[in-house]
Amino acid sequence: MNYEYITKFAVKAAERAGRWLANEQKKFNTSKTETKGKNDFVSYADREAEKMLIEDLSELLPEAGYIAEEGTSTKVGKKYNWIIDPLDGTTNFIHGLLPFSVSVALQENDEIVAGIVYEAGASETFYASKGSGAFLNGKPISVSKTEKIEDSLIGTGFPYYDYARLPQFMKTLEYFMHHSHGIRRPGSAATDLAYVACGRFDAFYEYGLNPWDVAAGAFIVQEAGGKVSDYNGGNNYIFGKDIMASNATIYPEFFKIINQIMNNMGK
Image (cartoon, rainbow, N blue to C red; front, side):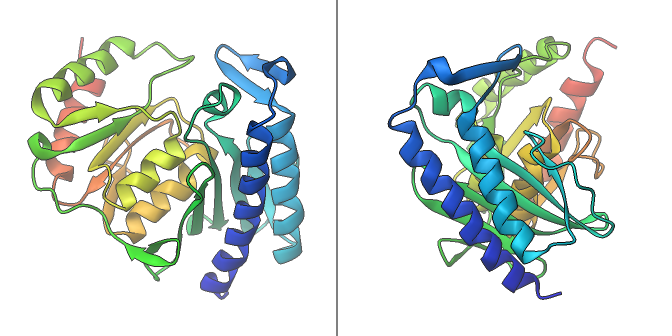
């Protein structure tokens, strides 16, 4: 398979959906929002964007299945599956805020081979294909060269429904307030990971996420030279509900902090 060709086609699909979302936000009415769960929202915009993506991507790989947030397609592929979030940052979107993004990843068997994150507000397309590096609007990107957590800017996301680990999470915030350049919470995990890939963030961590939130962004980080893992240092970050990503230099220090606080506090 020509991964670069696949990625370029998927980029166009993500950008088409993202541009449509950006236009819709200008006239969006919050009365059109539904609630799937506590602080978990969906609207016609999410569903229509997902339909657009599936329409375009089905033309590219008719045999592929989908792991998609809104469940527009339940098709399961034998070899290929698209993991897509048509609108990552829905809460931002419905409140007229940025960022919000379209996230698209292609899984071949058990391996991610392509990833696209289109941040609609800034018209920024982050993408990568297997073995070809990572790019932002056609220009190569790489993770930061920061060497210590104390010199790092760290991205995170606040839990919005799973508060079981909230005490541990609050402890990480306290730690990084004292031992880094600061913490940012943009509200879109896909965008956060893209920002790690291009060096705007030195590190990112969050728990309670789904595959469509992280698959594309995590892959882009790796192709940009970064390190991604779950809180145990393993590879179960796409389906395992927690993720941490950083440049390779600070990863050992970052992992030690996150692992110690998130996994061991209170034991």
